[in-house]
Length: 388
Image 1 (cartoon, helix red, strand yellow):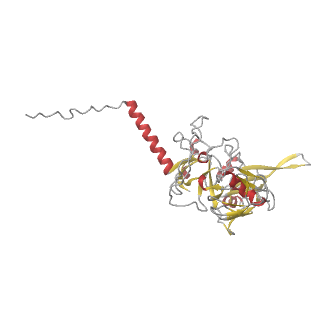
Image 2 (cartoon, one colour):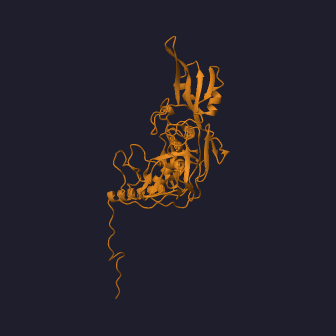
């Protein structure tokens, strides 16, 4: 005689998850998915500085592609997911350096090219910041102007690569003096996109500034004009006004040594006249002397993972041994901001190592004016989903 077991008899009853457990599992899945997307494909960044104006504005929110150059494997794996340097809203570090791994780059479908807008980790030690691992250094965005092996030179603000004039960026800004007898207010400058910004992490920049002359006879300072940071296209419009008596481009003269300019300890370089300087390339060998130490010494000391580097103005020792030449272990890039006189870039701190490259800026998905004329103009609608 045969008997039939009820369906499911002998099998353990399925335990129903509690609402809290279901919520926890959902959050965990979302965090893992978001972390993988952020690591492998795209990451969102906010722009706090005017160094790339007028291409990228303060208050822009952009997506950066990791697919173009290939994502980096994490050097510091012990991190709180979806954080960078600190836990949100606190000064508590969001990582541990107990484990440090070699970093590798996954295959991408492109390499960094001249003209690309690139997000990277700020290479040198930054004043006031902890000594972050390279993958947790502060993120910067600039335009790549020279790639590994290129010889870069800047003459009167014009960039030359391997002796050939590099095409000017249409939206690039620089400094001009507008001579006028009329008082111009903030509303006028805002009409042409010239807005002062005092909330920059790179420093307080003044995009328009009244210039006065002191009259000895009347003992009164009178307005002579304005110093502005803007594009050539805006200046061409301003020149047409009757009350404009003249416009002069403001730039440093050749042979003047610029304060804080990279390599200026050995060369009379400034922000507008710089080089010629060869960008390091993997496998490139350079001699060691006073001139090369000024520009390549920091690279050898900071980014090449050499042990016990002793650097002076005239010599380099590695592991106690003096060297007469050096061969670079990785590629480097030279980055500049489109706002040429309001940008802390490679002219001041040198080259960007290959392993500091984060990704390529591809488009702006949101843009908020940090100092809107009114609440209705808080969102810059014309900049939404703008391709870079």
